[in-house]
Image (cartoon, rainbow, N blue to C red; front, side, top):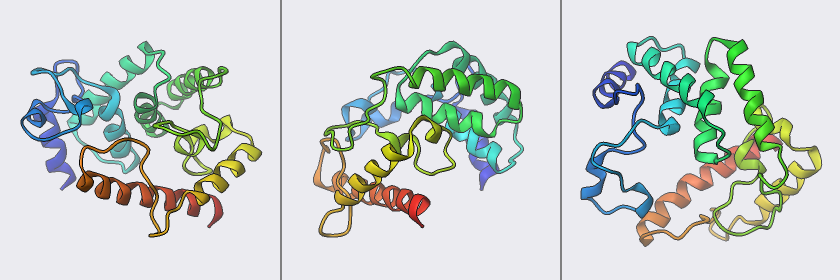
Length: 202
């Protein structure tokens, strides 16, 4: 199954060596505004780096991984982004790529950017579509865990527990485009929150 999936990735890989954030076919169907893409979208670290990182983690062998890795190295070295949806895929790649010296250099560059005052949202009760410490470090083994002291993590774990709703699930932090979408995303978010709580408290 994984080999066939990688074969498919080769068919949608752009000349840059990665895959786009989304394909133009999404435009023909109901979707949130942020999923709209141009006719020939460029490659993006999100999701290329996340996919390549997971394949490397599981020791998958396929030509696409080498092509994607070259793209990821170039893009990670060139970016100064502090954006969550760019950096978390990049971190996934860097955590599992074999060249550890090069990976550690880039991880430290990322850590330095994220450590600047005002970059990370530390208020456990802040509202809106925000990425807080437990999003950056969903498990104690996460690379970003060292960016937060124990007191901060404990406060966010307590706040996370308090946001569980009466039906057992957690709310989403953005406006859904339909009730069905909200139900679907609440399921995914709830699984993520339960895994985080289990990782820290299990």
